[in-house]
Image (cartoon, rainbow, N blue to C red; front, side):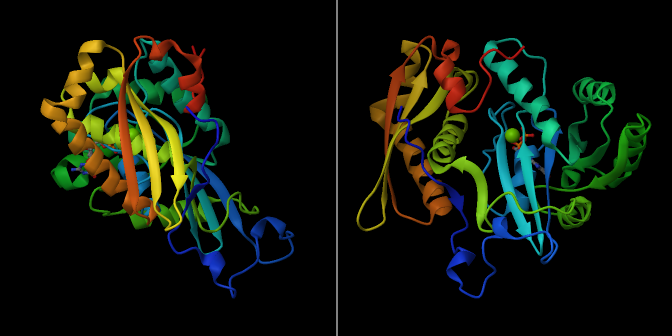
Length: 330
Ligand code: GDP
Ligand code: MG
């Protein structure tokens, strides 16, 4: 694991190269053109579509998505800058009843993100609404006296007649200021939600550069991309017992990037599963991950993956630190 961190991800054609663009906003005084800025926390049960929504809003895949629950492990911040308004969207690990240490850390990270938020979105999967999971989150939000925006997601997969009763039932809880119905997948309704949030952001200098997309170093984002492929290429439980750590990052003269990462599994007998027959599976994981990385970075990538066994990785503080999680979250 290297300590050296890579710079956060920027938009591919940075506006800063355009000399006619405004100077660094951080230096602006409050007397110049009024800017607005704030943070929006995205909460919801696992699989509600939080990461998909964030990616749609940012216009880049910065938070990994999979049909398996609990894909998002750390707090991912996506930055949207439009007009004079900047919003930092905080994607959170889904909130669920934690059992293991890693689970505790993930749930803690989700609740912690509320402290910085100017608006809170509760994403609900309208196509598979389950009272218990979302109900627990609503109870906790109420206990914390939070005002929340309800976002019914996956409307592309629900009969419209089911949406209004669901919205009404959820609004009976009294914690919601407004309700939006969207499809994070098709983008339906997302623009309305964005405009609503833009209007809600307080007058403030911006917190990030105009062309910044995330506060995560590219080294971590690319490790997450590999983990996403691990989830997609492997079945069942194994992905939860695995993690991906960045080993090194080297930019060559031609601009291409050599990325070395380790897939860490918790049992010796997981290693051959990740490798696959004659290394076929890790080859697929590597190819697909590399393609995604090239899309994200706008550069040719040479990706080298190593598979390591560490039975205790979930008990090692350095993994938590690396991903910004709290080792002793309760
Ligand atoms: P998260 O756990 O809340 O971050 O959920 P993800 O963003 O990882 O999404 C979970 C699954 O739901 C993935 O398979 C997504 O493709 C799917 N999904 C997310 N949004 C939508 C949507 O609007 N419509 C449909 N049909 N599927 C969606
Ligand atoms: Mg997620």
